[in-house]
Length: 240
Image (cartoon, rainbow, N blue to C red; front, top):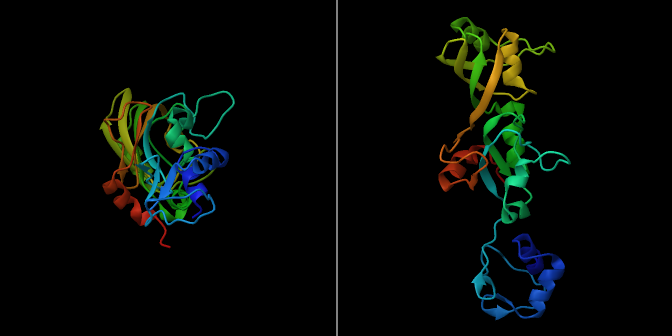
């Protein structure tokens, strides 16, 4: 990798700004001052320092966010705040994007990354990645509903869903449930309950694949995935 690209990709400025740092002799590779941005370095083997501080290079970023309501699962929007707007500048530098979408009024687990291959695998219908939601439902949710969900239900556009696992936490005029599905059609959870004559009034995603929402994250907060979480996610990471 070119030295100037490594510095730029690590957040130390534009190519022009990096060029000035190199010109001033602020960059060393394996203890030797290097001023040529075209010099090639191995980020995994060479020690690169800027003003004496070692640069740790990483290509990808993996963030877990507890998405709040009234924020879009998008990279940019002219009117509303997006989940990217909630990130600090260093995280934004990696140009992450949300893996899948949560509705504007839906809270909970959201994965953000710049790893396009991983995102593709997690969203591929063939992978049938399970996603679990917690919801408040206007209406009494019954075991009959659970049976229907387990068989699949027909949505308003005629699409017949794959089986979903419905767990009833509390059945009342406002019921509490958890629902696990393996696909992600537009407004799917809401439309599945509409198919059985009920309405979702609060929705929160708890998990996606092997990743569980960190309940220590307040709404709008985020953190990088742990090594254990990355290891659990590796089954969806394509082999080179």
